[in-house]
Image 1: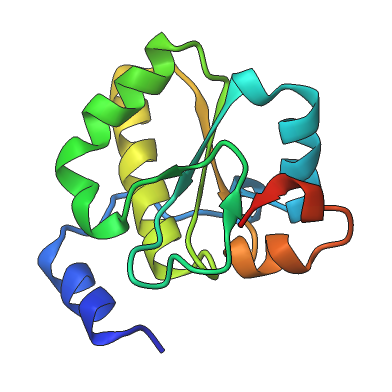
Image 2: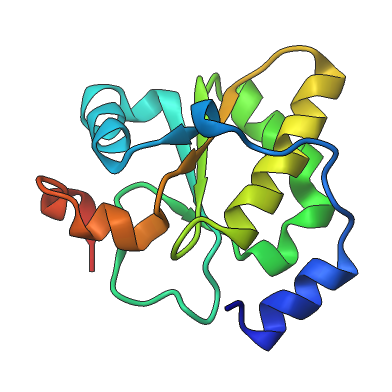
Length: 140
């Protein structure tokens, strides 16, 4: 169940026109591999705000979901100009905040016609932290 703050945020922002499918999710092990193999090619956006506890994925940008909607196009363009190949979004569980933000970023990408691919970290930060072989990729 989403917190009252997240419910309010969902109700006060528009629904994206696209919904993620299974191909739009990356397993924690796949994200860990991308971080190890080519960290300069990816941008990880951590959408947590009040629940930003327990560390963060190394190199992730903490941009709370509640403040991201009006900056989606600028944020996407920034990562595109930085030649990022993938943008990975997550929150604590990658449900409401991550899927909604993924949708807005994907809507913007579709309007441009090209740019970095957008993915959701399957299971969010909790799944990444619990996955085997990711402890060295978490900053406390």
